[in-house]
Amino acid sequence: MSAAMVLLLIYLPAIFAVSILGGWVPRRFHMTHTRTQLVMSLVAGLMLGVAFFHLIPHAALAKTAGVDFAMAWVMAGLVFMLVLLRLFHFHQHDFDESHANCSEGAANAHSHGHAHDHSHTQPPGGPFTWMGLLLGLAIHTLVDGVALGAVMRAGTGSDAGILGLGVFLAIFLHKPLDALSIETVLAASGQSPRRRHWINLIFSLLCPVAAVIFWYSVELSPADGRILAAALAFSAGAFICIALGDLLPEIQFHSHDRGKLTLLFILGIAIAWAIGVVEPAHIL
Image (tube, rainbow, N blue to C red):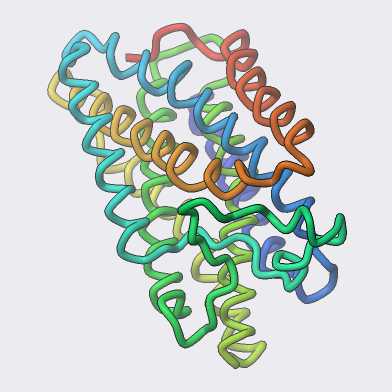
C-alpha cells in the first residue's frame, strides 16, 4: 500500500466525521454568529493559500500540461463555482437570529447598507429552500472530493512529504460549516430529525466517495497527467471563487470584529504557505 493511499485512508474518515459533527452541533450547542464568522475567515485564507501555493503550481508545472493549460482550467473552475453560487446561493453558513441583532449593539448590526442588500436569514420557503441548498452543496462537495483525489493520485510517485495536507485541511475545516447550513435549513423547513440525520449522513459520504472514485478512475500515464493537472487547476479555481466570492463577502462588513477576522484570514494563508514545508515540491 502506497504512502498516498495510507494518507487518503486517514483523510477521508476524518472529513466524514467532521461533516457528521457539523450536522450534529446545532442540535446540542449554540453556534454564535461571531464564532462562525471567525471560522469562515480562517477557512477563506486557507482556501486561497492552498489554491495559490499548492494546486496551481502543481498543475502549472506538470510536464504534460503547462501554465496556459492550467490557468484555463483555473478559470473554468472559478466560473463553474460562481454559476453554482448564483443558481443555488448555497453557502448560507449563519442562520442564527443573533445575525440580525449582534450582541455587540445595534450600531454594529453589520452595516450592510450602501448597495449591499444581502440577507442572511432567508425564510425556508424563499430562494434558500433546503433542496436548492442541498443540491448546490452536494455539487460543491463532489468538487472537493475530486480535488483531494487528484492531489493524492498525482502524488503517488512522490516519496517525501505529507501529500494533500493543504487540500485536506481546507476541506476538513470547511465541511462542518456546510453540514451546519444543511441541518439548520432542514430544521427550519420542518424536516424530521430522522430525515435530517439521513440527509447529513449521505452528504457526509459524498466527498470521500468522490475522492475514492477519482483515485481509482485515473491511472498515472502521460495522458492522464493532463487530467490530473486539469483537476488540480479546476479545484483551485473553485477554491478561489468560494473564498473571494462567498466567504469573504460574508464577513467583510463586520467592522466590530475586523481585527480578529483579518488576523485569522492572514493566519489561514500562513498555514497554507507553511504546509509547503511538509509537502513535496512537485507531484506531477
